Image (cartoon, rainbow, N blue to C red):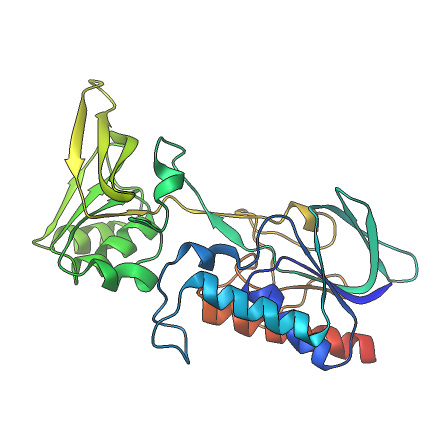
Length: 303
């Protein structure tokens, strides 16, 4: 039995492991795919304290190395269920077997929703981005597109309009679905235009870098090739929290309900990072969550 099982090896999960290990707790990290989470899609990060510039992969590698050096155990397994035992311990079932711990930290993150069209996956990090705060500066003076029409897309487009030469918002519906105030603020920008009733059917590339896209008018079916130097996909996030069923409350979007203490309704069951209800989802806030959740778990175990 481990003291703490951490589910997810993104910045929140890895930070939680480091803090728990330094408190002499035994830690098992379970990760279903790759270490680092969403930050590995960022080729250059310039807003993480302590680094003028670092790639997401480099930062992830450093965190993994630090956790392993502290004594973390790591297994590449997908968690399918978590159950609460009569003695308060938790059993974590994976696609490879079972693990038991006195406490569990869920740090499974939230993934950006993709359009699911040709060329998209290959160009993530090579012209396709998701976060204007993170990557907007790299597109200064460029012609870019924002895909989406909700609040997230409108906010991204407003931020990008301040640094980009032009911003084209492509929305599949005939109107924006975000707040009218945001829409009015965006459309008042002289370098912004919107294309409604249009979907993206393919992303185009040259030498492995995004060069444009193919857009199709929903009503007429007519397709048009458009040149862009960058695209921001802003159609929402999808938290990976099904495993918390029965142990923690989730909001209507699927995020685990928690305050800044990273506690849930179940004793010994904690949440950290982008999979919990919160206002800001950045690497720095995920790191903070990881530390907070670990300290809460340590306090719980030491009682």
